[in-house]
Length: 360
Image 1 (cartoon, rainbow, N blue to C red):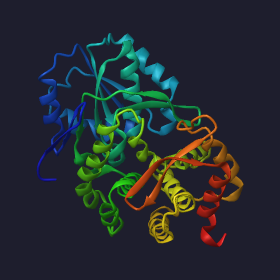
Image 2 (cartoon, helix red, strand yellow; image 1 turned 90 degrees about the vertical axis):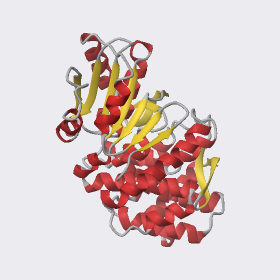
Image 3 (tube, rainbow, N blue to C red; image 1 turned 45 degrees about the vertical axis):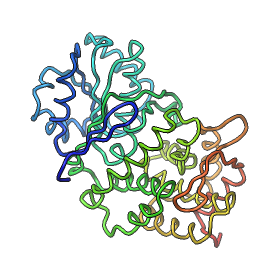
């Protein structure tokens, strides 16, 4: 990425470029925070914090808050520990929390900051591709409740988002695949041409995907600006997530947990099947989606013995209204419809489709 880009949303500014420290300095030099805290997991502390802190003096006196890496740390116990650490360190409503990390850090940190003393400022500096194009954008903060994803949270926008693609240099391939699923989602719900371009990328590497970061940000930004609190249009961003969250929750309780984007990829395949059944999406579109998802995510395996548990988890989806499960489904590639009622039996069929395809 040769030049920095500034993207303004209705609530905050997104900086996209290869000098995160400079963008942080520009932001902090206009503020007078009483204290600065940086939330990280052990991975971002090792690989990303040195890159950021070596180029700015604004973090010399910052207090570091470290958590273990992984989705299972996005819970009320860790949030409570962070609130206690902030209290013990003298944080107040005029302090700043910098969330340096992936989606777990931005979700958890945003939630912690928004609740602490009824709200302290926070900014997100995402270090994973998934957080850069999705998790850190849009003002959603929250934690999991047991095995149920994102059950506790609120809408609370950051003061700024700073995206530096240099942080992707140490990202494992499974993290790239996880983010790629959300990028595909952006194309499926909004832009058929973008979907096609992403589908034709020969090798999924940071270098090949960095040029598409801005496009994914713009797609999500335009949707969120129109519907910041998910009353209507923003629900299209939930495509793949109703079944996907259930699959992710299921694997959290096994010896082989999977990443958020991997679960969403399988969820998108299930919900593409539902799109043909409920919205009459063309079977040829399902075939295109099927081919791409199975090409990259065939290592995620579920079998018939797991269906009942996954369906049960789906029934606890936070988007449920009364007795109805409301999904966002595809009319066609590039067009998504919200508030589509889905039955338990249809979810079962979609999971069997994942396992067997049309031959089951």
